[in-house]
Length: 305
Figure 1 (cartoon, helix red, strand yellow):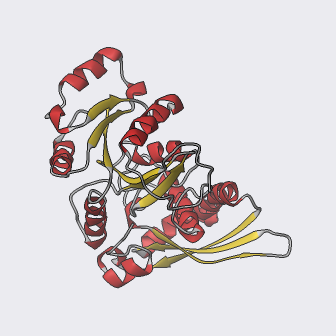
Figure 2 (cartoon, rainbow, N blue to C red):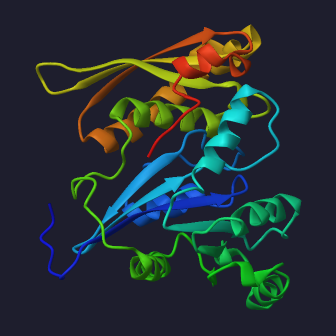
């Protein structure tokens, strides 16, 4: 435990919500100083509620990075949507992210309506200010609907560590007294198996296109150390059709080798050990619409935090 140099210790849960691809995972990774949520330029990168833990000398904040809110098309989409809504309840604060380089649209307004119904104070984070001019940012800020629904509107870039520190200070001020839920050196509540599977899926998101990113799940069967302290990881890449399996493997195995190389580097950074990664590609038809498979692949319909 950190030594508490203040009279009281404060703690609480903070939900991060917004449309897909507005920078939620980027912000959370910047807050804790390490990758705990995967990132890509494709929608629906985050499928589970991923908790990141920030601990200072006098407070602990548990950030819940939710799946991007979108219109559901299958059981997986519906699970993701319910997961995002659940995160809005019983938290000390809500951070809603919008992107300064994209006009506020129906999706943003829909989430704003969901946020304003909650009792928790909500902050509107206008992210990606580094991508627009001061004039465009001023026009964007003036066009925000119902600004009174938010405790504060904060323009910033999640890539700017100084601005992120300022946000953390604001959130610390409103936290209630509470316990330290997690050890000071713990950055996420997810087991290593989950984070490793996400790092593999991140490589697939970054290296494939069209329908592939949305049709892929990754599971880790086994992780074990050998006598030289090297970690052997055995993982499955699940797709919905044989044609997708062919794309993942690639001509002469080129694609799966590229995915494995990129994922291995990220896993080594995470574990601090030499990693041997073995990947298998399996076909499970329409797995996104089968509740039993969703549960098997880690998308439980009920999540507690």
